[in-house]
Amino acid sequence: NLKAGRSLSCRPCSAKVAGASRITHGESGTVVYRRWAAMKQSCCNPKARDYEFCGGLGATVCPEWVVDFVAFRDHLGAMPTDMHVVDRIDLVRGFVPGNVRWVTQAEQMDNRRRFMAAARGGKL
Image 1 (cartoon, rainbow, N blue to C red):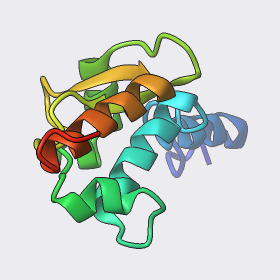
Image 2 (cartoon, one colour):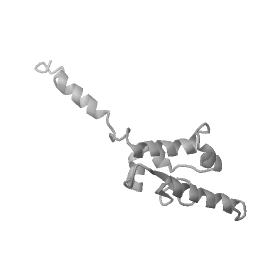
Image 3 (cartoon, one colour):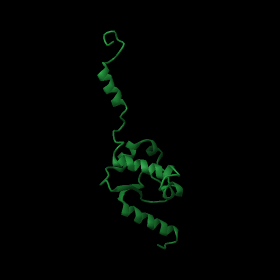
Image 4 (tube, rainbow, N blue to C red):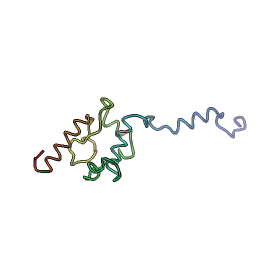
């Protein structure tokens, strides 16, 4: 088949090429990827566990980040530890460039408490 021009490569080589073409960023099993997927779920899926704190309050995800994990990862930078989560600095705004950061769960809960207190007129 190679000599006759019916194929561009032998079977083992074509399998390698086909496998490599399906890999986009190679990070779908990482913690950062799971944090990205969870962020999208909490904003876009009413059945998600944290939807009431994000999408339920009107928070959205930057349209580019919804479809492009690499753009999200590159903007936010390296995750300090596996214990960090994505947090919005200003909870009134969505997950958009300039309004996201890596924080610990404790820092995220403190940010949420301050927001909820301000919404209730400053009472914790």
